Length: 440
Image (cartoon, rainbow, N blue to C red):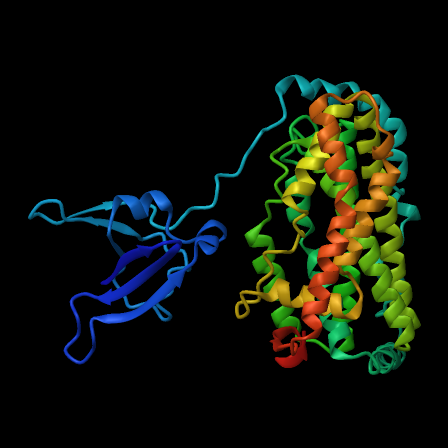
């Protein structure tokens, strides 16, 4: 087994990893690790209560590959030696993440959404398009009903157009496609929101109609991008398909707490994010010589803009009927920071896949930290938050925080950009492009 002994001197905690019993050809001390007080506050290290209560921790019956105390392991035990009898009992030796907060909206506020159903029918549902007026993926793809030679000519032309697009562009396009393909997760997330969920699966509530129809419109985005990528021959579809399955299986927790106030603020921000991202991939495709792909990405961006308008309208209405409640929800979510919907992305190989994809998107200018600040600033203006009246003292503090946040984000990002320029960007392999390396 691996035994951890700890010693603290000032603000520094040092962990010593021992093999017990030691092997015949190995030292008992495997390694040691120094943890500063700052790391202890910010990383999932051993909890303070555990460290005070016990000096020895049995973390595993196997020698860990890296002997790192920062890797969570559910099989932790505490070893107590207060008497001659050694006893083991289950504990959580690694600081567990805080239990997610759920159902945070007061029950009486469910009535707010019930009272807004007529308003939603008249102001939100009209932003959906009838199916017969919607574009479909096949409108942009080679026609399989053509004679074989004509169909293959269209596929050949598609491949010739994409030949000039670089690998890093395809990494971003794949990441966008995978994000779109996880639409079952997003529908599920919205259906966790109290007061607006689809109670039967086919409810006639305008909130439920919106969610089902929004999902149906969004579903075309992933279908179109996946088919295009498949025909391009530029990417490893097997690894992409695995990534989609991993992502949908992982789910997401954006911190919306089953609270529709938080949920609709989140979707307002996210729909604008995807509008910007797809708009920029459209621009890069046009610059790279593929006008058809540019039209595909631009068409998807147009959908996202319409969806953003719907969610932003809902938040506008909440600010009208419950200014303090809505203002505090915006501040709460911005204080947590907006979690990207595909942040649990994984391909079976790279545990930091989303961070690496996001770094490439940042480098290409598809979606950047500056865009994050721009979106916040846009929504502050769209919702008139700086001039919002009728707030309680708590609401005014939330207003001050949100309205001053975008400039702070920009200043911090400028400092981060300056530091990044001094560093040599690492090279990372992406399974989506057959393990070729890209600079981050």
